Structure formats: structure tokens, C-alpha cells
Length: 197
Image (cartoon, rainbow, N blue to C red; front, top):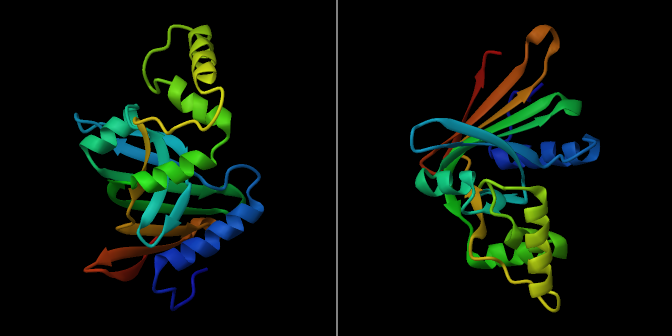
């Protein structure tokens, strides 16, 4: 149950829940569903991994030419959903999307395993692939190209930040009497309200 006087900043509550999820979830506590919208207004959902967050938003990385990358560049709004089954909790986030800086993208790319860096060059993410062998050939080719030294970040690979404009915290309750708390960002401040389950 939420306290009668919840935290004034949703990022404080998220940090607490995320830490608990990292301790309890068996796999990928940072997994989140990302929902984008195409030019026809059709929503599209997929799982991505949270790679950082602070009061300015939630960050993930991708190929900018992938379906999600193109949709986010064309319609920079998104929704995120964390579902931590072992804790019987979920967090829903909606907000505007901005690209991360080149410095942020470079720093994260440099932290990735070398094979993942090679994979970022080799994969034409979301585009048709004629065979698995074709992908393996591309991985081998880029592996040979960058066999020695640093693998540079591809120009088509970067990250996005989803600013939480609306953040809803949901906790399972007995007899489906769940606890729901919503934070709305208004004029730089946060307003909270409870919702019926």
C-alpha cells in the first residue's frame, strides 16, 4: 500500500522500486515494453532494456534506422511499461522523447561488449534478412574490419530519453483491489492522485 503522503517526486519512488526489482527479479529487471506510434497512427510495442534514468527521463539505445528508431524520430512520444511479476508491481510512463547526446551514446557504446559493438554495425535492424548465414557473414566482415583497436559507434546507432510526463505506479492488492498512484508533471512540478483499481 502507498503511504497517505507519497513521495513528492516519482523518481524517488521509481528508484526504490527499481532497486527492489534488481534484487528480486530473476531476469532483466530493467526490461521495459516500449510503445511507439507509426505515421498511420498504429501503435507498435516491443521489449527494450533501460540503460539509465534520472529526473530528465529514461534512456535506452537502438539502431536509429530500425522501426522504433524511425517511429520515434517521426513522432517523438512514447510509453514505457515495467512489469515486475515477482513483486506484483508495474510502472507506466508516458512522455516526450529526445535523442541522447553524442557524448552519452559514445560512452554507453564504449561500455558494451566488443561482439555487441560489432553486432551494431552488422545488423540492419528491422529490415528483411535473407538468411541467418547472411547475418553471420556481415558479423564476420565487420569483425575483420574492426579486428584491432576501438570499434567506433555507428552513425545510425544512438539512444533516446523518454521524459516522464505521466508516471503511474501500480501494486497488486487482494481481491483485485489494487493500489494505483499517478504523478502528472505540470509546470515543472508534480501533482499526484490515486486511481480506482
